[in-house]
Length: 188
Length: 193
Image 1 (cartoon, rainbow over the protein chains, first blue to last red):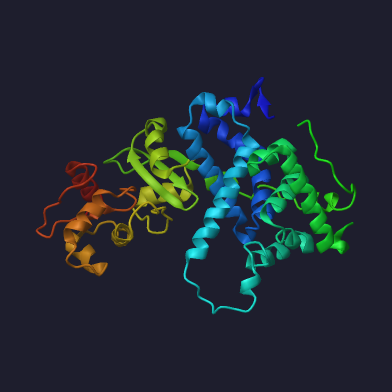
Image 2 (cartoon, rainbow over the protein chains, first blue to last red):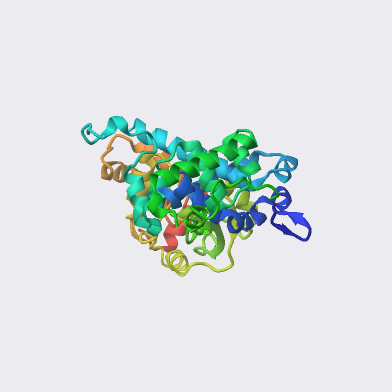
């Protein structure tokens, strides 16, 4: 927990939202950016998604009672906003009319199989592992990224995924297993 | 955090995964906050409160107290506000010279029509005026003269986007969102005919 003078960041946000907001960016900007890039596979759009997450968080916090803000578990709350926003962005993008002809690869493509975004992930220096992550089913990918890239606890992952902690743990281990099958060469 | 999920094969993937963490994007705070400054406006107006987002200047009103406008700015721009002490030099220059066409503006909350009207007004140099009908014609909507007036009345960045340089066709100065007296004084100071 980030605290100043014995008060948590959530308590300071409850007291003066705009004054404490820079500290929210400092404390969780990296966690949100990492989630945007790795869990949402947002590729080149990850920076926009990160900024949008904090703007949405601010709008939400403005509407909350101080007691509700003070009680928030900020990291999983922010990461949930980030994942929801990414889903909305994808939904909006998929509603846009297709500009390219239907290609043979499309039927097998789930929302997270390799896509132009994954190519962007590959380009950003993370190499094959970042692209392979994007091929995991969503709950597994989110669980693995939150646990092993962001460093969240099982309780935080459960809160983000809206599931029990045991389920969160099993998403993490299944995700790791699947990654190992996909990529024996990146094991070490 | 107390609990750690068990790792089925410690030492294999997790260190490689940890290396995938990325830092917050450069300039994240600039993309989230609206920066608010108090700057010197033209003598007819005095001090002005100006708000700027990462996309450009989004708001201007006469005033000396940024906190008095902070609530309005938050409401309009839907983002947190950061009061800055230093006026960006390009903004100070534009306010001094009356030539503000080179600045970037954040007009995302305006309609496409309103943006066109404001962009047309931005092209009118200091010392000159244009009739409402000229603005309507220049954006390809010659019959929308009244709508041009409404769009100018909703100018979020008066003075910089010089809606005061748009006047009635019969030579009457016309209405202004900061008052007709202010419009007349601004035009007189710019030595408009």
